[in-house]
Length: 183
Image 1 (cartoon, helix red, strand yellow):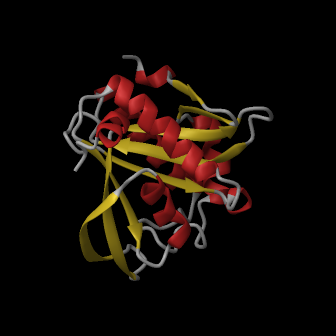
Image 2: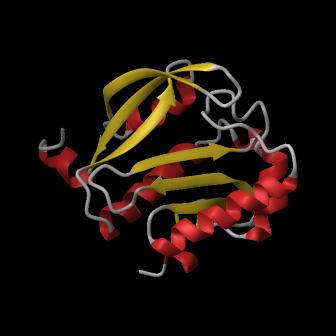
Image 3: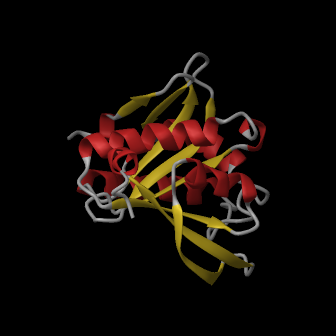
């Protein structure tokens, strides 16, 4: 499986493997407001964004993680990023962030459905993990709409010092949830 040239297409979106082509978009859009409910913090200098991309590409080459940019399928405008971490585990973790102007349009759910569909066709796993801060209702709706159930709740201090109340969801495989065999 060639992860460095991966493309996942949905009705409105194109998910492509992360590249340096998007460093300015990521640096500009991954800001304090976007990271409010996230463990990480925004880059202060574009070199930090470049390091993130370099490290991500190394992990993609190793087959450990998959980091994708989210693009509008018609305009190819950058909308955000999505990830599957620990892709070879029984419980890979998926995540997403969208730039502020892309919020409220259903892109988050569409992205995660596209990512989940790809994972079910290409990976061997028990269920997908999706974490969201308890106060981040729009993010919580994504796993809940996909049949996700809370399997763990814990506090985690972000890199900015904010205490996050994390809800960890298990999202069953579509086949499992249709058959009623999902956890």
